[in-house]
Length: 448
Ligand code: HEM
Image (tube, rainbow, N blue to C red; front, side):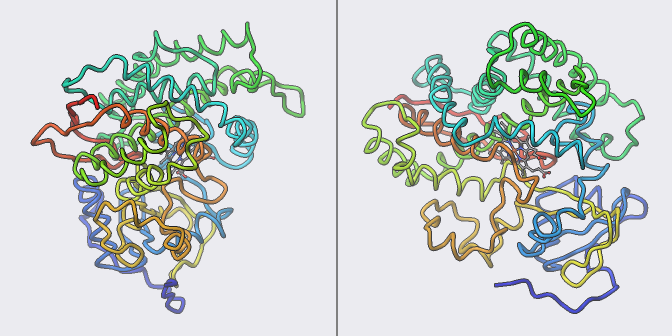
């Protein structure tokens, strides 16, 4: 089904009415998932509304999203509204930069994500998971998300920086966590960046704690460079004039990778565990596959080809609960999308959450059915009907890393444990940069 593009119109697309000054921002922040879903269902493939930062265009059709992220990507930037949220912590690192700086960053970091290099990380991924499982006790109630945040943080630090941050994992984890929480408060979005607020003060303190660790890692690599780790690579780079990167530029990349490279994967695992606990028939099939293929041995990269159901479980979980629930862009020049002109400076919102649950692309879209992911089904999907890692030149640089990690961790955990949701636990998700649970999701772990 392709987009039903009407002839060009200089009217605004239809959309929800808002309040004076605040527009729809309160409605959006109060219940983002409900707001974005209702807007798509009521107004169709393209909807517009007002927000204090200017007009917002919500794109709900995969073809329109493909136009913005892929075909016409050179006309789009992330824009100040998005960048101001991340800047206090990630500075001008790859996730938050544009143009020549972004191209240089992407070029420098790409080798660390080459498929051959990623394969080398596999055994370390299972080792860190095993190490975490050794601290579990049969019948214990655990906060699985905290376990996963710790495991994925250790993995990204070791894989990309050759660093063992066991002693500092709580300092780094809690500083990044503090930042994500503080950046989700309403005042952070509504008040201009310079205005001091309690949440901004918390972000500053979190940054100080984080920087102490990160500058320590950089100094360590300056003294003892290692082959191929990202910090050593960044320390060696020079521009045309022979200038090296500043300590702060390197710090921005390191913090960006720590942040972007651990919470998203941890979330995908937490939300997968939640779904498995709610769907025992899926868990049963998963464990059957793990027993058949692994026969009691720890999973390796070679096993993954045969762990097809495991992969489908991860894919289906990221369809229903995409760890990044939406992304934003801003056109530099006017662009015609779906028959409407989007002016420069407008915010374009594209929500994985909405598109992944659209009944036009997914039969019974709210059902958790990993077996739907057949080759035939994937071939029939419009390209951008599934985009947990975005698409185009700014597609997630860590997509393969994340898929390898998620499958290996899931296999290692479920091979050894059955996770039971503590009765009465409700899943309620925030929706800013990531879809993190608002409350703990306690799970009782039973050794198989
Ligand atoms: C399930 C796990 C993950 C998901 C769902 C995910 C999703 C995404 C998405 C949607 C973007 C695009 C953001 C935008 O355009 O605004 C992105 C970018 C990025 N991701 Fe991931 N990610 C995951 C794991 C990782 C990992 C493991 C790493 C690194 C180890 C990583 C590093 C990055 C970086 C550096 C960018 C910025 C790329 C650029 O702007 O060129 N991500 N990710």
